[in-house]
Length: 482
Length: 45
Ligand SMILES: Cc1cc2nc3c(=O)[nH]c(=O)nc-3n(C[C@H](O)[C@H](O)[C@H](O)COP(=O)(O)OP(=O)(O)OC[C@H]3O[C@@H](n4cnc5c(N)ncnc54)[C@H](O)[C@@H]3O)c2cc1C
Image (cartoon, rainbow over the protein chains, first blue to last red):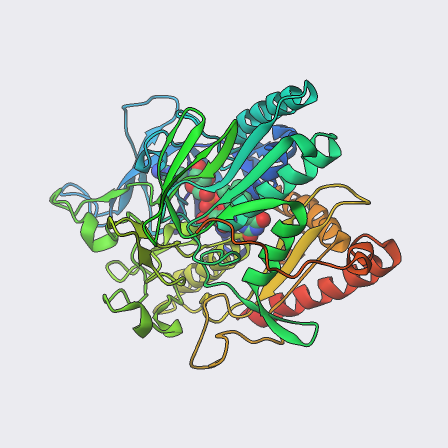
């Protein structure tokens, strides 16, 4: 009998737990530990954030799903990993702080552990950033509800004739997830038009991207109209068409009531006044610690300083120009303990994909690599498959899911309406540019494409329902691709 | 960098029309889905 414990019930952890349960025998147990007892389909939070969806349309309770599937659930946050157990007992375990009893701890023993704890939202890295400060976020459904309320207030003001200034983007030079903020700004613009107040709004995109359309993945190139075009042209065109201004290459230094301050790579110190701001935070790992059997702190053996977990990547420090696609991890196994894996946002990327820059005062303007839904789920599934094989006797991981060998499909909503809405449908292959295999653009142009239109919106709606169906583990769920 | 004067490509009226012209978009729906399935297939190991 083996015990597999999965930390986190987001895209990656939930996928891993569901496949483990499907593939393992009933004698083996699968336990999910998560401080949230509901699932959130995060990509649809942008629609909650403009008031088009209610939070209950993007979430559902996990307990009934896990009960039905035979997955044990521990409602709490993992705090420390004890990969060697302790002096009394060598069984590895995780110390968990139950949500119902803060300050207390329970032991959750494991034979195999998957860390899929996702990101910690680091609003604290920029003074005044975030829902406890002066800007909004759509990272959780609660944040999105607050954003929608404030957005609605701005709309009411515009209806009374007031002008309103909107600033949307990222709130720090090292943020990732620019794609999500991009979706939010174009949806916000679309909604202002739908509500008949667009002429009263000034909208500005504030980003750490060196060029528009970088998305933390060094941008991409598409064949279109007889040219190979960079995604910067694609985004600039959409922003120009929608009357959205932009500030690129920026580190947001502070947010105060009605004002965002920034510094750019060329040393410009600027500020943007706003009535409404949605600025995503930078991410770190969730701050798990690790202790050996004597209780000595071995966190640095398992985690990078950014709190993400070390896996089978090449973390050797080297100049940006020298990194290679093969530096990226394939099996997601911890080099320190063969029975520990990290999946989704929780694993530490070996380096940036976008070229990092600095402002003259030394602040990093360095978009972190995104780990979107599709790779997060595929990594979760590959790790689950490896663990099942290892339980059955394999020496090591048998499945791989390198982001340098997989593509991603992404649909970025640009306005939600079944007849007039649009979305940018994109595919990239591979996610991590491979300049050895594809010397010109780093990617296979036959498999990298982008297009904007109503069909994309239909696909986005379809994906919303399909992925929620799949996450509820309804009949046939495993046939729906990641 | 603040917004440069937008020396950028903007869509023609025809392009804008096609973006929400339902018969064309039904065709694109099928084609984009096929492309995405291709990506998914080539990404599974
Ligand atoms: C607004 C927004 C829009 C997005 N849109 C898209 C999109 O359109 N397409 C796309 O592909 N991707 C999108 N993404 C990215 C996508 O949401 C992530 O790729 C995905 O959620 C990553 O999955 P994950 O499982 O690694 O992390 P998460 O989904 O964040 O899950 C982490 C889990 O760990 C739990 N957890 C946290 N701390 C602990 C702890 N101490 N112990 C145990 N559990 C813990 C959390 O409660 C959560 O259940 C978007 C992201 C955002 C923020």
